[in-house]
Amino acid sequence: MAAPKKPVVGPLVGSVVQGTSSTRFLVFNSKTSELLSHHQVELTQEFPREGWVEQDPKEILQSVYECMARTCEKLRDLNVDTSSIKAVGVSNQRETTVIWDRLTGEPLYNAVVWLDLRTQATVEALSKKIPGNNNFVKSKTGLPLSTYFSAVKLRWMLDNVVHVQKAVEEGRALFGTVDSWLIWSMTGGVNGGVHCTDVTNASRTMLFNIHSLEWDQELCDFFEVPMTILPNVWSSSEIYGLIRGGVLEGVPISGCLGDQSAALVGQMCLQEGQAKN
Image (tube, rainbow, N blue to C red; front, top):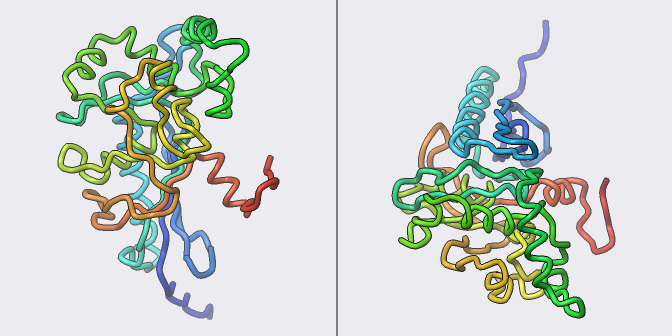
């Protein structure tokens, strides 16, 4: 007769992995790093025109709650006490741009995904404004001017989406990458949600000075982005707030990293010069 399975002892850690094609939630034993359970939900991608890629921010958020609920069900089936989950971290697809109404909690436009190419003309127009002898955008951000990064996607929305323009004028708009949207929504949303991001996600927006580790006024002026809509930049490991709904209500969200940076940490690349592929 097989020996009864020993109960899992010690604090557990939950991890939201919000990717481009799917969302996952995983629970680990913090002492052994053993993966105890997980659940994955596929996401819809929309292609309104050639080269355009969008996702529904509300579908992304709902997929996170669904993955949490289903993972906790699986843990209970394994006789694991889900109250042992003491912290949750967020890792996310980077650069994907969300803008929403802080009074209603509703997205003002679909999330424009990192691989979307609609901003090519925006990039070409902006590149003509950068002095040839002083590429301050690259020296401050470490990034080439490209359709990839959030600032040009945000600039496109400000130029082309009436709802966004109006919300910005009226002080209702909040901008964020996917991590910011999730953390704001999960920590209360319109009822005191925390509007923040971490340094790794901020560094992919093209609005963040990687030397001073703060939003840069010159970059915001260049892209004509009002700093009032930007999230507060925090470290990648601190308590941002408590989850305010669903099966893990009351559990702190205490880690946030863009997915590639999270993989770097996961591979123990913690010193300058180390890399992962």
